[in-house]
Image (cartoon, rainbow, N blue to C red; front, side, top):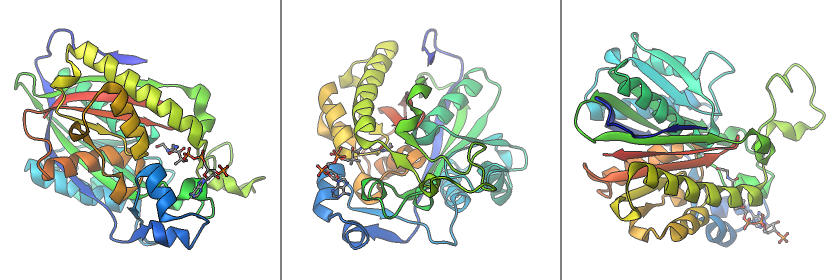
Length: 337
Ligand code: UT7
């Protein structure tokens, strides 16, 4: 556990100066899924809120999505990629085993000055990445950073398993963060958590060192994502509520001070149930899972980008980003936009 308490305000904060997102053009509707597995639009929409998801073609990869989202965020920030100091790509569907997906992003952007790496914390990766950048900027070590969440989960989904294939989609979202002395503006607080005892609830076991590609698998299904949906569902609600309550307390804020909650988009019912327990009114909770499905590390920056573009988050608003995912991992950032 690593709680980054607010304490005395730091001289510098990490401020979001640009945000962008990108999803592949190809889509897959619930009705189309109903022709692939024994499911229906009615079941999927009622149980998850998902209507359609974006899916990469064989020629599209995680880095390609990440690069597009990054270009949009850099354009918004009006920052030249050559000036970038750090690039973090949060992903569990990387371009290759190595080098990092971030290396391909660096190359495509021409960000020659940056040092770059991938962060594997599943759905929590983007928010974990923001907390790292927050530390770097509060300590005044770096001036700017690019954090990307990018996933092609469609490539590790078992398209014959109706309990998991209906949930996921592909996409990318990115933030440019810059060091600023502008009072409270920026990331105010971050709290991150993990519970490795529950790794089996959500996993994709091949091809790592335990099950290398060079050895035949006893169970060929290990190349696909496996989920224990019910367990994840219950844990997610519990941890989201707990994390938001502790974050508000640490920041000396109440639920009324929050302009918008941007949760990891894993299931609309999970987000609604957590929001109800927190007594957050619907208009302060953003849900766009209907159009994207669960895009893991990409879901929070995609949702944030859409929320700002549609005028639902404005400069000066207090926003909470909250995540939960494989590991298990969970966490939150509180920020003033
Ligand atoms: O970001 C983290 C990753 N996300 C997750 O791990 C997802 C978290 N969990 C969930 O969102 C929900 O648990 C699901 C959406 C996966 C499942 O919803 P549920 O309400 O928990 O359903 P269930 O697993 O309890 O299954 C209820 C029934 C079962 O049939 P029986 O045993 O009652 O006859 C399932 O076989 O629904 C059946 N079912 C389906 N039916 C139609 C499961 N998947 C489907 C499907 N279409 N796609």
